[in-house]
Image (cartoon, rainbow, N blue to C red; front, side, top):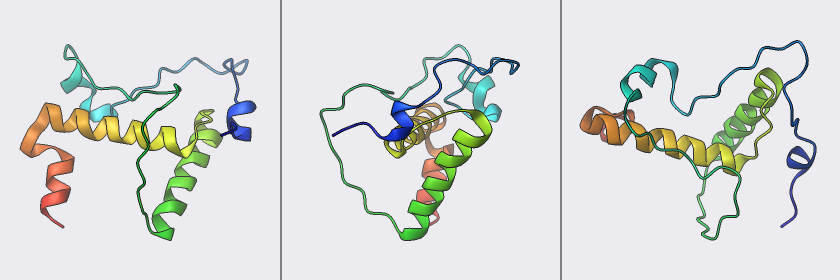
Length: 112
């Protein structure tokens, strides 16, 4: 598969005049909890040998695309949907590792 236009034309340097901003794989409120502990991270931009098909609603797909565009527009992060999903999975699994039954994933799955 060929790379998308976003991947071909992604910025490779921080735009001049904008401060460098570290990107965290964990929401701000959870950063203190993760400090000092090994955190999960997604595989990022590497060749992936395994494939998984996930069916989503039209609204979920639009929300994912809006998030991708928001990351690009407001945070100068050009990522494809696959990378966005891998990061979201890494965040959810790190929260599960850290918080177990109190994790957002367990709470959401037990209320639905």
